[in-house]
Amino acid sequence: MAERPRVLVTPRSAPGHPSLAWLSEAGYDVVIPAPGRVPSVREQRDAMATAVGYVAGIEPIGADLLRSAPRLRVISRNGVGADAIDIGAAAELGIDVLRAPAANAQGVAELAVALILASARSVPAAAQAIREGRWERTQGVELAGRTLGIIGCGQIGRRVARMAVAIGMEVIGFDAYPDAAFELPGFRYASQAEVLRSADVLSLHAPPGERPLIDRSVIAQLRPRAILVNTARAALVDDRAVLEALDDGRLARYAADVFDPEPPGDTPLTRHPLFIGTPHIGGYTSESVDRAMEAAVRQLIERLDSARGREFDGH
Image: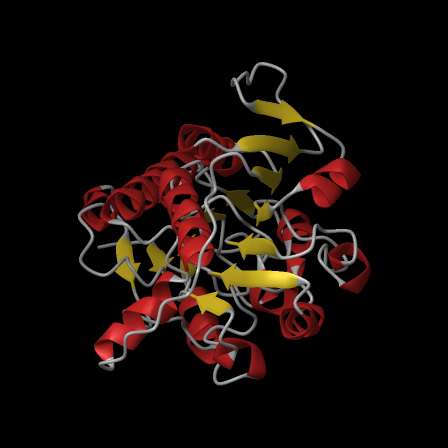
């Protein structure tokens, strides 16, 4: 009896998910090297050596790892981002890289708005004071009538815009490829420079570039006492510049769901009283996990099945 081809599965939310049964039913053996956590490089390498498919989480997948996987045909991300994967090396090796666009967009958008609200009203500090038996009140600000700037108006950014408009905010957004079909009273597209200088609250939803988007020079352009929220990628923000801005009052709050590395450990930023951090939970809702896993597994099976006529024993 021929050995069943193997599929490597690494998302932390994957163990026990019903969609994994689809892989077994389709004739694949599921390999989960690090249940509930990000695999080490060694665990990745060992599991990739015999895998034809890879349902990938947030872990880096570099060229060396890809070259160590002679049978690998398809990598399917359980999310929209693939910046942790060496796309060029994958293309050279004939490995398809698939994404699950918009699968976690609602969850991330809702968390971004939650962090905006928490920042405006100092919710974490107030809750901690009550927990410790203290009665300490910090005067907040109302968001209605203020301007939200959004960098990156894709699926997530547009959802944030809708919720912010419902609160009563004016919203301006920058996107490298704006969707002209997106129309929302209270929202308009603008240049990145206008978004930065006009925003009382700035929410990041763009892919990372070669250097941080938010550095000292950009922070100097923001309105005094602005709130900055990052639920996109840690590389978008220069942490040292943000820390300085929190210390000198240029920024009122910084809230982030993404870090480099993850977990970030105990740092001057994570300890700062004006910082709000969450452990990369934007897409960690039952609905987002289901959509992302189902999309990633379904498209992996479809792509592998389309290649069934080829041998799974090398590029």
